[in-house]
Image (cartoon, rainbow, N blue to C red; front, side, top):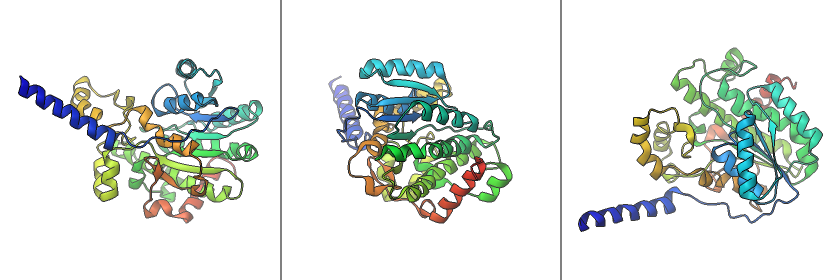
Length: 345
């Protein structure tokens, strides 16, 4: 019995060492107070890193606009955030990123009601089959195009506020992505099918679009005082692995949920037995949502990172991108194509 207890204690100790020194990752160290400032957080406000991000911003005194599709779930999240933060300046505005009409309606309402915008956090993300209201592939339409239009329509308010930031949540899977403009023109999507593999490719493509969008946005915002950043949420054992062998990391990440590392409700559609089977892996190697929000918060709040506008962050630090994510010609063309797709040009 004593041997068993000793082994159990050793396993627990090893778990804690690995979790707190390797898996849990860095934390946002900014002490910024946000009283008098306004932030928008898109998507998943009822669960996940969106809610965790909104809660921390509210704790720091910000007026937080929870921008998502489901009013009932959003209001439940707002109740929790207000109670935990003691901040009643947390409000819901309806936004369905799968509808360009809804994006325009949200922007009109926001600009009419809110005099400033300090933080725009493009957090929402989806993976799966289907089409948006405007006929685009779901991942491309929501993850990239909806956020592109939202940001575009709010740019003047961001510039007027001064010192504002745009934070777009990407993912490490951008490395597996590509942008084929001929496929996009022919299919209103960056993939041609709806299989599971196509869905993963579509998600990866949209995450690459997030990174390229941020690079081009930084170029267009130069000299305005507004800065922007893209990021991989959180960190994990794969963060260390990817710094050593990116090719291996890219193969491993295919077997993980789309976020790469965050332990959210992404596994809710798995069978009970499969969830039980993967539970030990999730507990050890996946971040909780609070830890997963830290890089978002770092990009939103950290003082002195303004010269890094347009860069990509992971584990609360700048991370180098692969060559296709640094292609400014593709980034510029993606912007111009996105303008046309949104009816802006």
